[in-house]
Amino acid sequence: MEIAGQNPDIISARELGVVACTRCTQVWPAGTSDCARCGSKIVARDALSLQRVWALWLIGLMCYVPANVYPMLQTRTLLSVQEDTIVGGAVELIHHGSIGVALIILIASVVIPLGKFIAIAFLAISVKRPSTVSKQHRQILYEVVEYIGRWSMIDIFVVAIMSSLVQLNALAAVNPGRASLFFALSVIFTMLSAQAFDSRMIWDLQTRRQRSDTQ
Amino acid sequence: MPDASPIPLDQLIVCTHCDAAYTLKRPSAGERARCARCGTVLITPRRKAGLQIIAISVAITILIIAATVFPFLSITAAGNTNSVSILDAALAFSDGPLLALALLTAALIIFVPLARVLLTVYVLVPIVLDRPPARRATQAFRLSEALRPWSMAEIFALGCAVALVKISDLADVAFGPAFWMFAGLVVLVVAQDNFLCRWSVWKSLDKTQTS
Ligand SMILES: [Zn+2]
Ligand SMILES: [Zn+2]
Image (cartoon, rainbow over all chains, first blue to last red; front, side):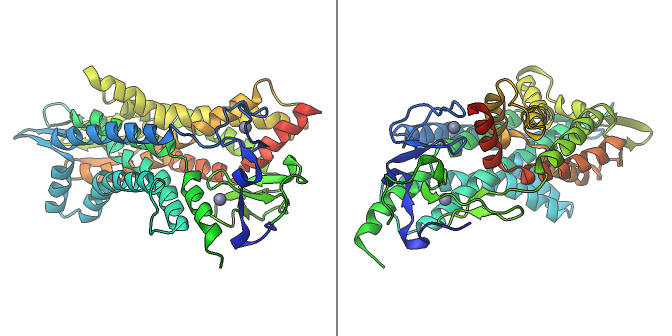
């Protein structure tokens, strides 16, 4: 597509005095309150959005703690009953030699959730304070957080599949532990937190600053 | 910088991710218009995309229903056999407070993908046939878009792979017919999502409404 005025002169809709519907992208004059095309509420910049981001972020974090403390999976065999937390289960897998699968679990259940908490917090702080990280990089970070966050749900699905499948009477049985509920809630609330973040705010501060230093 | 006032609103396209505004120029079929600032795909028209998406959607609907009913995986250990369907897997969390989790899992892997497909068909069929949009088509499409992050069939598929490795220590695992249906389903869901040009759909919903 031909872009009106390549890179340095890109103007924001806000500077043009228009506002776009975030759902259907229809453009309206600034100050329009409802999108006449799709019916969504139009918010130029949501002043409360950061508060929502932080509130959901905090709930997500609070659910993440019990998710790691309680057992995720209870495996009952003829000889023993074993309860594994998320990390414990991964360590167990490494002992059995399934390092690849252990890595998937660790990445999906530990690295991604923790990375998400840090990334969302960083983004939310960076729109209030000037940041050394470029706007492009922060936008990419946001897209990555939005895309990858859902994949944390994989551990819940693994637990679901295992506990429905491994029901062999006395021989072996796998049952879900309490952590599964907390973990699912944690994933959901961090997803909601990321969705509540208005990524247009990343660019607001920068466009203002760009005015002064012309290239 | 161009002056704001002479540009009519329907000549503008705005990136919803970074708020960059551009004057609209439709890319030809097969090309993609990306935001020059943040790289978000703005328009991605395809020839016959509507028909293709409807065909894929019908296939997805059939596969979801079949994959839910037929046995999905089965295990054997020392003479004991157990086979489950996807619905069984989703409803594994059935005791006490975990029931909420069972409903949630069922929604994420079966009902949300199914709802999105049905809504898409409902919206697209009149557009493809050049008829006025279906009743409440805009609401339907809006809902379908809002549900997008909550459709997790592909994540469930990777979850199966992980679970299989974990179980292989305990018992022998065999794939049922539904497993292969589900694998095909995941490919189709991803394809459908990539074929769909949201901008074009909204545009056609709009045009037919005002004329
Ligand atoms: Zn709209
Ligand atoms: Zn953009």
